[in-house]
Length: 61
Ligand SMILES: [Zn+2]
Image (cartoon, rainbow, N blue to C red):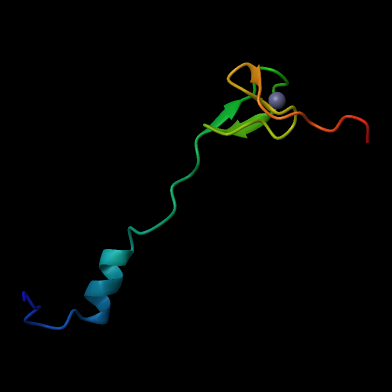
């Protein structure tokens, strides 16, 4: 099996990993209530997704 000939130094390893980071999520505005929501996610304020009601929110509280 293929095998590395030399050990990767801590500096080389850490330099490679310097690009490893979580991407900033793309944010959108809810078309129903105007709240800021993550893309491809049901609105947490009103439960709408792409202009349609996806989750009924408990309004009686
Ligand atoms: Zn909304």
